[in-house]
Length: 216
Image (tube, rainbow, N blue to C red; front, side):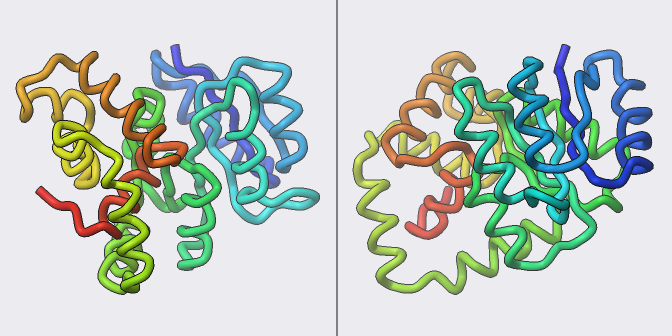
């Protein structure tokens, strides 16, 4: 059972998301919060696997809240769910440690899919956010690319293979099938890759890989 926290200052949005998520037998809405500070309190009080976090909220916005949630001793995965798809929000959310970025006009089935994917250790980006990530990759500066290549240089050749597939959005199961590994072995590789690159999640690792020019 995936325990979810819904963080939004709009009570109707919280109600709608609760109805949607509670209809999935594999998901339980464990708590709700009306702003970032409340989200931290609720996550501390409850065991949360995935937090759906709005961006614009009073007292503490969703970007700051994401960074604070990810810094907790037992951090939840975070999906930023917002009405706005401005570039600054996409990059700020991912830099803060979000594992996904979705717009509120995302189809209900895709929101449920995102919760399951992120809970399993994968990432989920709205197509508009993914487009911005790709545009950023194409605009990578030489110093930034060199710094990324230096960090990627810490990896073994096999970890390079895993990172290349991770960067194109493959799940652990996909990577295992393509590289002829056990899924548990891929998971161990991913953990080592995140540690070696000094990033907090798969999305940040994928961005770094693209900055370094890694592709399959």
